[in-house]
Length: 574
Image 1 (spheres, one colour):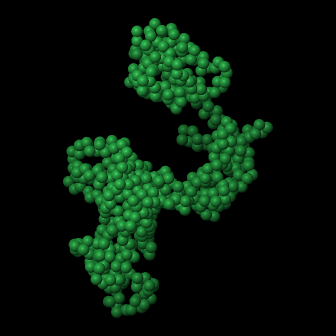
Image 2: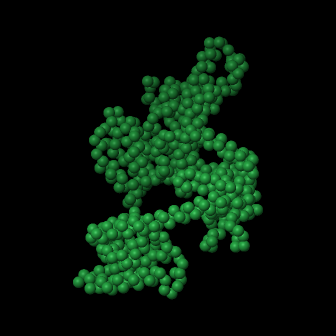
Image 3: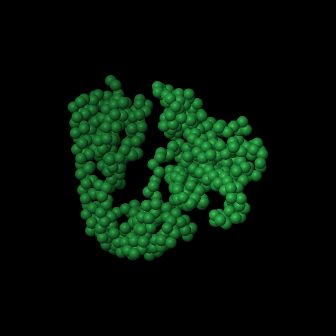
């Protein structure tokens, strides 16, 4: 006779009564063992290992004993489980979705399921139907109970009471001899008022967080009913924003249900008057309007880029004037990645801060495509390039001295095996990385690491080699507008000076232009035609700045100019 190894699983939703000599878990296990004994003629035996979850809801899969049971089942024969025995179906799960997943796991490993008080066999179609019906009723009971709780919370808040959860900064919950509600903590109330006053002066969430953190203030620290301490973490921009927009400080209680938020008059004493609340609200609304131009173009590394400390780098953008001396009012959109550490704790605390998005996207794009070196994808348009680059990238880590791209080995295999049946008639150009990365194969992940330095060039924070050289040849040439404008002004001033036979001083006075500015830019007319072509078409190296061009223009020898800028001497004017 074949031996059938049976595991008994027990669960109780709360910890009440578990300290008794014979509790609910013991009773469930005894019932399961009695049932197994009644089936000994079928070869059933109970394994000695216990799977008991005390104080865990049936609506979650995250239960220690259940996780051990499922792990033993997944190990197959070595796990030693053929049948799972429970007292009732809802002891295993009250979620139809989770139960279906477990049943699939049981089927995959030929494990049967038995309920002691609800006789059915999951190996038959009728048994499965009965099981699903019982589970549906269990889930229905759970949802109805949840609705009753939510209704009670809504009714309590409507009367102005604070309902459970962490009390906000400045308040505490009632003590045993006090009626239910929120009570002011004078020391914390002073901090709350200070937050509002500082924001009115600085208009910056980050500056408020930095100033208060330097004074030793943290997020609210409080002791829960279970005896555990919570909070006490460094102040962040997000925490300051939540404090400034929390209606509890003007004596209100809010309740959100079904996406709709209702506001009620609270029974607690407010900390902030309506005048100060209104001023802060107007300042926040003004800032929100300024940031509503959010750039919708997809950033290549969205959701994949982090600093070496583990902080996410989020996509963002800003409108900036075309040039510092721009008088037309025209603006350009600059995309960048910003470290969440810089946002939350201040830019002085983060060595990474921000990085130009166009530059970093092109660098990673070129680095990955160069490593793949797959001819079929090279013949595809840029949208296909970016799709596969994002697919094979697991994550990107940026440190002050290294850039590490982690590639998923299995996805690289998928790419190599993918059938690119259609090729673009006009395949897009792609960036090229000028340096070979260090490659480390870790099995599932492949690490590509470049040694870098982060350098600010013409207002953009970019990645350069440790020696200060360019790392990438961009895919799309893009002229730098301030360089184009400077060259244009230099040639216009040069032409008008010759035409009118004026001195630089006379011309500057007549047109209300600083004489020093004219003297500074005029040497740009001495640049070689080849350098001008590169500057106006955007094919100058990213590291070449306006100051570099002005320095090169001091030498009238065109060959010397091009050598100093590292240009190809064989390039000619188109």
